[in-house]
Amino acid sequence: MRIGLFADAYLPYVSGVTNHIRLYKRYFEEQGHEVLLFTFGNRDHPDDEPGVIRSLALPWGKSGWSFSMIYGKEARDLLPTLDLVHVHHPFQSGRMMLPYVKRYGLPLVFTNHTRYDIYSDAYGSLIPQAPRYAFLASLLKSVLVASDLVICPSASIAEWLADFADYPTAEVLPNGIDIEAFAHPHPGAYSREQLGIAPDDVVFCYAGRLSPEKNTDYLFDEFFRAARELPRAKLLVIGGGKDLDTIRERALESSHTDQVIFTGELPYSELPGLEALADVFVTGSVSEVHPLVVLEAMAASLPVVAIDSPGIADTVTHEESGLLGVAPEPGELSESMVRIARDAELRARLAKGAFAQASQYSLPATAGVVLERYERLVTEQRPAKKRRTRTGKTKKS
Image (tube, rainbow, N blue to C red; front, side):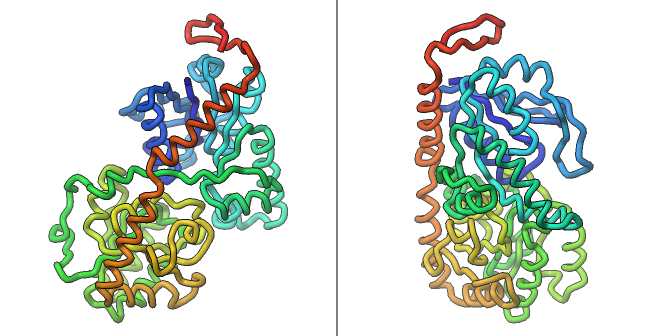
C-alpha cells in the first residue's frame, strides 16, 4: 500500500503524537509499505527519513506549530497516488484533507490523540466555555463523520468522544511503543554521577512538555512537599516547554534546588538512556489520552506515580504497576512518592508489574492491527477505482 499520514506538526517539534507517527511510519515501512508523511512548515529541517512532504506555512511563534490554508504543489501531486489517508490532527490537516478524500475516493482514517476540551481550557480560557466547546465539537465532528475509521487509543477517550462530539462508534486501538529501546537502552550520554546523583538517591523522573495542560505546577508542588521528608530524593526533568524557565526559577528559589535536575529539551533518542538512570516515573497530568511517555517508562521498568484520571487509569494499574492518587489535590502525589521512595521491595514489585503491562503494547500487537484495518478499508474500496501514479498516468487499484 501507499499510505499517507497527515499531521499539523512534525519534527523538529517533539510530542507524543510526533513520536507515535514516526514510530508507526518506520514500522509500516519495515513491513514493505510506502509511507508518505504530509505536514507543514520547517521546510529547512534536515529530515533523516524518506517520504516527508512539507508544505509552506507560517510558524505560530516559537510553539513549533505552523499555520497554512493549502497544501503545496508537491503534496497536491502526490495525494491522488495514495491508497489510504490517515490524519492525526483534525483542525488543520484533517479538515484540509476532506475535499481531496472525497475527490479521489480515498479511505479516511482519523486517530483522536487529544482531549481538545482540556487544551482549550489551558490556552483559550478567555473565550466562554460553552461556545468554545460547541465550536470545537462542530469542527471535530466534521472530520469524524467523514472518516471510514475513527481510532481512539483508550476506552476513556472513546467515551469522551461519544460525549463531547456525539460520536459513539470509535474503535479502541491502543498505541504501541518500541519496547526494546527502553527495556535494553544503549548507554546514554549521561550517567548518575555526571548528573550529581548519589548511589543511594531515589530518582523520580518526569519526561514531557512543561506546560499548563501537563499540570507541571502541581507536580512540582508535590515533589517539594515530598522532598521535605526525602532528602535523598531527586527529580530528573526531561524536556522543555513554555513553563521551563518559570519552573526552573521556582526550583532555584526553593530550599530543594539541589534535588531537581533539568536536562532541557533533548533528542528523543536520548530518552531511554536517561530513564534508565531513574527509579520511578512521576506525572501530575490529568489530560492524557494514552500516554506513550508513561508506557515507555513502564517498558524501562519504572513504576508510575500519577493521578487516577482518563488515559492514566487506562495505562497504569494501582498497586500493580504504580500508585495512583485519587485527584490532583495536595498530598495525593507526595504521599505516594514518600511511600515508594522508602520501600525498595514495593519499587521492585511495581517495576516488574510495569514492565509486564507495557509488554502488551508491542508494535506487532498494535501497529500490526492498524495495518490490518488499512488493508480491509483498501480492499473495500469501489472496484476498479482509478488513481493517478507519480507520473500522472492512471491505473486501476
